[in-house]
Length: 163
Image (tube, rainbow, N blue to C red; front, side, top):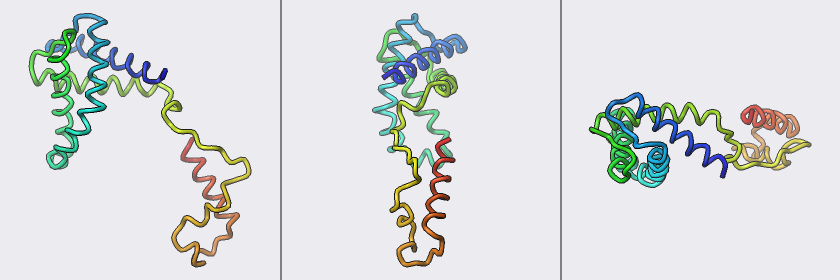
């Protein structure tokens, strides 16, 4: 829960900074930025995936640059829904969305990600005995690696990915 509040605060700070940097983006105050960040978060969680799926061919054709247009459209829509955020034009919304996403991404690097990652049990004596059986060919005997060496190598690889 704390991670969500911190991300909301990061998005609020990003909206305030973008409003300070761009002339076409204005915020009525801290309360307007908080409300705009909450609604922008809801739109990004609910509407944005549907828009990305519907515009997937165009997004592939433009090598992902159409995502900036979608983000700008969502910011423009948020400005029409809320009374605390004012966007003067569509291109101001696109530039504002770019600045907000960059600042929000930068601030999100400092938020602890462990709250959102499910924790898996750490094996003190190595991985479970059935782990070598998941590779193709291991049941038919085509892999001549002993189970103990294979399991310890796989365990070391999994540990390296977590760190």
